[in-house]
Each structure stands twice: as C-alpha cells, then as structure tokens.
Image (cartoon, rainbow, N blue to C red; front, side, top):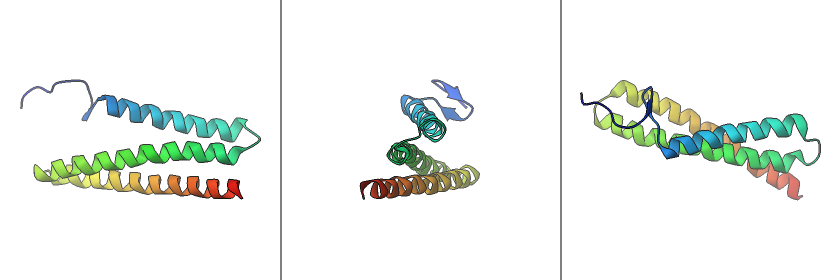
Length: 111
C-alpha cells in the first residue's frame, strides 16, 4: 500500500472542509450552551440560530458519510460502508431534529 499524502487523524483525512465543519460544530454547541446558561432574555431566537448551524453541520456530516459510503461500497469494503451508513443516518436524524427546532423556534417567536 502506498504511503498516504497529507494530514490524517486516524482514518480521517484533515482537509479545510473537515476543519471548517469541526469549528462550526464546536462553536454552535458552545453557543447553545452559552445561551442556555447565561442569557435570560430572548433565548428562543438565539437557540434557533444555534440549532440551525448545528443542523447544517450534521447535514454536511451526513452527506460526507454518504459519499464515503459509496466509495467504500465500490471498493467492496462492506464493513466500512455499513459503519458509514449508520453514522450518516444518525447524523441525518440529528440534522432533521435541529432544523425542526429552528423552524419551530422561528414560528413561536414570530407570533
């Protein structure tokens, strides 16, 4: 097997997209925690914004898992494809939940 090029963290290749999603994921989770524990007024629209970004991060993770699952399946790596399918499915469900909270928070706040 030829040596891998670039930076890797275990099996995950470190790319600018991975770094951007990781920063957004940690930043939005930190923002949500900050709003919950420190902000007393107008929490709902701030939480909606935080969960919107968190949902976008998990949607990107789900799409990335789908692409890598397709590549693993084409290389006949069934175990990796199954693992990526599970990770991608869970990430998609979390993204749907975050987007649902964002939509509901927006509707509640605008009434």
